[in-house]
Image (tube, rainbow, N blue to C red):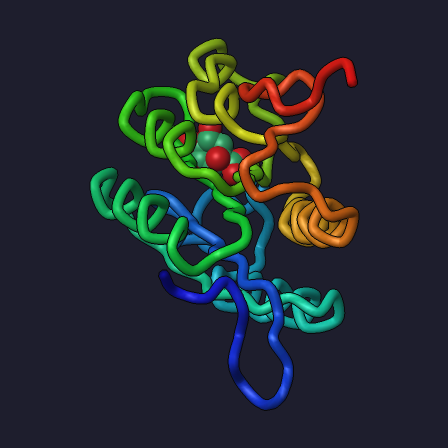
Length: 176
Ligand code: DQA
């Protein structure tokens, strides 16, 4: 099975897949009053810098296609210690991405730049977030670094990759 660490240099850093869903390739020009004026490339630079500081390796991928996001999540179980995902519009509609998140034995943290709960009713349903380890919403690009910080914390606490934490979907945490 593939390694979950970065073999670059002498370090063996836990790897994190950062997945950006549909229309996030247009960040910077897309509704900047809602999503901010940073491009996705600039956000990815900030994610990489924070990952480096936290001792994590990161691979960032953007796709407008639901099936590609499903495949990336599935494959991450063979090489990544965790996934950070902004499923964008698919958050509210995709059973397939929700099922992929539930299928993999690694923690998945969902991020939204905006706060969907403060927006239109159709954004209040979050199928993907309901299967995730946790959700960070409403802090703009900083949500990604908050998610990375959470990943670094629960990895350094020795949380098992398959654990979904308190209130999560697995029964790994319970009475002794
Ligand atoms: C989003 C919120 C979604 O409702 C929307 O469809 C997006 C971006 C966010 O990051 O705030 O595309 O996920």
